[in-house]
Length: 94
Image (cartoon, rainbow, N blue to C red):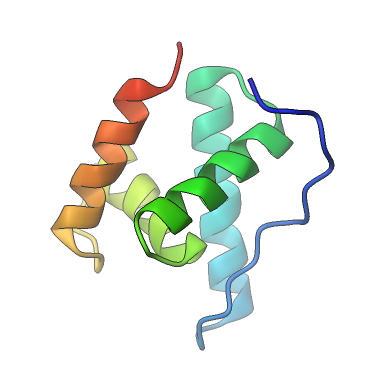
């Protein structure tokens, strides 16, 4: 799907605890890996691309994916971001 280039680990630059951000990013990568049988590098590349496309930080994308879509919980993220991610999920090959 994506070129096998070693990508840097996902990180966030927002001013919140690094452990929280790291945990959210790892969970989001795990969701994509489990649902779409992707490598960690492919899942990370998708999350980075979505953050650029949606003009949101990777931690915001991760939180919206995990809480807003996967768990169906309320999320602190804009509902529009959740809708955009849902559209992108539908376009991924299964």
